[in-house]
Image (cartoon, rainbow, N blue to C red; front, side, top):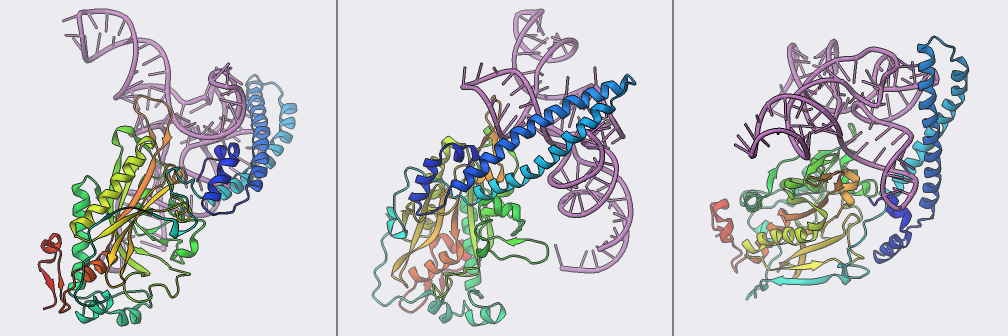
Length: 422
RNA sequence: GGAGGGGUGGCCGAGCGGUUUAAGGCGACGGUCUUGAAAACCGUUGCAGGGUUACACCUGCCGGGAGUUCGAAUCUCCCCCCCUCCGCCA
């Protein structure tokens, strides 16, 4: 969410940001609401001041056993007017906030211009895609061959876009989860295991609501949502709090299952593990001072890269362009891992700086040491990493001619085996 | 699910219809004193919105929301959270 005063006073900056994002939103209704909201507010404050003063007077008169009936009668009218104004104030507040909640974040100046994903810019590349002397298989063929994935039964149990991992497949998933968490905690991230059902306030805090309800699974009875990413519960750990400057940056890592409707992605990645309604992910979250957040984004991104490097998986880093940027983000790097089965790089992590966009929604502030007042923190997060897609990358990149799969050295302690298959 | 008890400033804790502009304490900060420190004493002490060049000033905030009243931390209703006991349960 953007600051209402900022939007009010910088309409041209907002318009420009929206243009860069390829988004069309008319600001006129907001300006009109704000005009009414502020004039109502000023009138309301005046009347309340009067009420406070006269109430004091009434109190004094009554103490002196004098008649205050005239004043009381007079105040009845004032009181009624205050009530009316309060009512319209409430609805104007809500209208203004509802509008602001649908405005996306302003892209940072360093974000490349572009209208869609074709405008994304490769920042760097690591590792060389392996040359195969045979036709590499897809991960689902490999999975089936080794009996470690069972999509048919997953569909029976739940439906399409669910998976059932078995034997060494399930074990590999668990090994990756532990490997990633150990890696992240060794770099100073505190491990947390948060709720995966959250309330609407948390979803609003990180920006999933109100705009993206259609992408979420919702529990019917008590209004919980299943999280689409650990970003939601972890960022909301500090919702409504004021942090101390010396504690920053606050860094968390969390493993959670993630749940996404994937509405509108019919026909995309229908086979295999790439796009699931439920998948596992380890997330990195940082709360920082505003002046540090871009350096922290580089740090967070390299922390996610370290995991790919540790697994010796070739990848590249893409800077998302203005047209491809997520709603809440001011700047995002995507990590894309090489998948021989598809012959292309696929997203495996997304690392973003939200600046104060989420912090303002979720009311997460900090106090500078020795200074008065508070400021919003900057929040960042990134996958470190999507576990299912990492598993896919390992199967496809480490497959051998006979179909067996070599386990990356770094994972061997977690797997207790060096190989899947003969 | 049933019964009861609670949610007040950074923390503890009083207040239960009208100098509450929230007592008192702890903590923190500043000062006096001191060779220095401690103690003692004095003072200061939140958040948000409006407003101002900046001050001043005004308003709101006692878990959240709605209401009663000239006036609500205090009374009524709804909701959330915490604690104790019972039931159920991994």
